[in-house]
Length: 69
Image 1: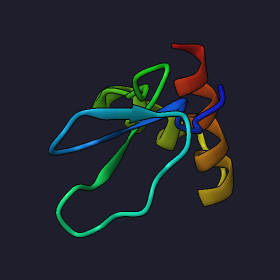
Image 2: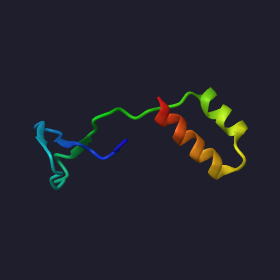
Image 3: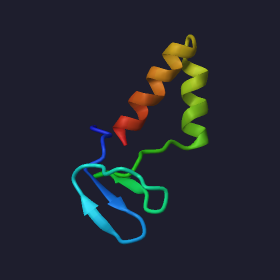
Image 4: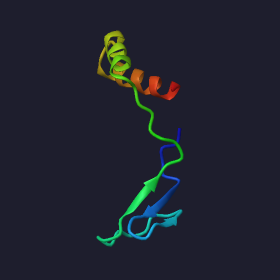
């Protein structure tokens, strides 16, 4: 999954752009994504932790699990 923004929207005047403009302190550019972030339940995370060998194995396992959703 590509987690890069697909567009930017500027707060204050709702201007939409495919490239991020410069924040001027008043109107801030916010990223828009094609897909919402995928989340795991506490139970899913704890299950992966219990089955993992170390921290790196755990990190890889939860990333794989989130991509399955």
